[in-house]
Image (tube, rainbow, N blue to C red; front, side, top):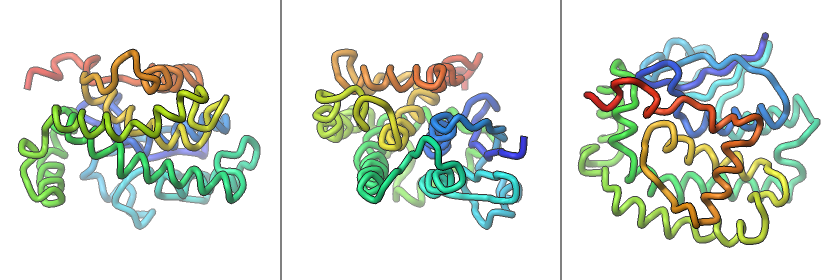
Length: 236
């Protein structure tokens, strides 16, 4: 197989938790494209130096290497035009809204809720890097940033537009899932893989959407290894 993607792993190689990598996995499944997912750690910078990038996902497709999850969506539509992800300019504008909605509205509340769980999931070789880089970014310690009660309140407010859409249709894209759904599901899988926290109640339309997304493409999300599946993961 010539297609491969460098995919962030945690304390166990089966633990794959990057929200951006999850976006691409759903996009590849949507296209029906096989891919080898290569485990990568935060400190494995040399492994992806060929891409002039220090973060994943990095997709290698034959002689092509593509970085950034959204740019990978664009590349896949160009290289494999069947089953488009982004579609015309109007559809792409909608997808870009959901990209920013996931990153700027949903992710902050989820982060405050699961941050120390993510730290626990990180590979031991990466923990010093993760702590140092994130604390510099946040301007405070991980422990100070971690606030599940505040995070869940933030997330609850941020989910209101999504609830409105899901009252109208089973997916953000409508009757079938598409780019908008894939761009959003990544942050929920980030939480599902690294944490046992319940982000939404089972009466929430977002909960029903999440279960539909987990079952999509042969249970792509539901079958992902979680921190709760790793023996001894909560013993540290």
